[in-house]
Length: 312
Image 1 (cartoon, one colour):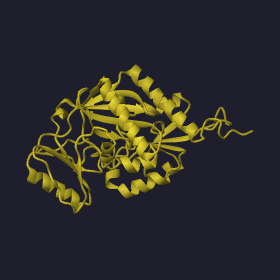
Image 2 (cartoon, helix red, strand yellow):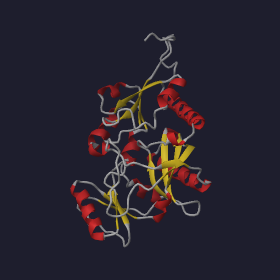
Image 3 (cartoon, helix red, strand yellow):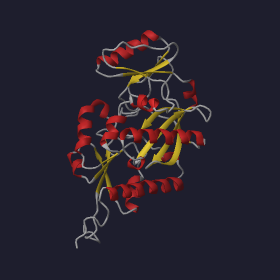
Image 4 (cartoon, helix red, strand yellow):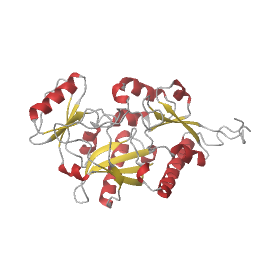
């Protein structure tokens, strides 16, 4: 292709999927167009494609097989010249033990106990959720009312070398989780995620790729108390990692409960679905334009603005 302005630098941007979803799950389908409308050219590519390492910027979007290739994936994040979100953010956030770090500085989180392989697992009385501390798409997550079955599942995860996360089941899950999306630290939009885990004895239904549990989503307009919790969680994470909130191209904050006592369930900084399809077309285009502008700003921060490689 002959460029109309050969003196203007055109960074190579990759939206990273995985072999089962090399172009994502469809939710991000409008991002390439949004970036192109902003003068940025992007393409989809599986994260393990060697060509991804040649990109000027890689944006993690659907790398949902990392749970089975963790060491390989984390090593790859350090070899990518420029990654969003940054590799140190990925390494911290990929393990749900980050919830303990956030709780320690006062962020209200769903009570969470972690048990490394070889440690004795303790389960509270009542219904609980047992899942791997490193996981995506609800893989390995189950609800239990029988403590012996919960311990058996936890033991199975530990024998696989996984740290186990045990949480009391919060009945407010029945009302859905509120997922709030932030772009460079500023609130963008929100949606509600219906319950993914069936009652004890059942297992989640996964999509054809097998990488994530199917979800029931719908738009949401959270109360400001929930947005405040989202801002607090992102600020606490940025402070812990010694980065700015603007260094986080995207974040999704999943919260249980309403304005009276919301609690953080997850802070997703690696490759969360951003729920674009829950927005009507005009709002979706506007917010995806904000995403594209944020990518452009990040490129300038990396010294990769349109005139950064211009010849004198």
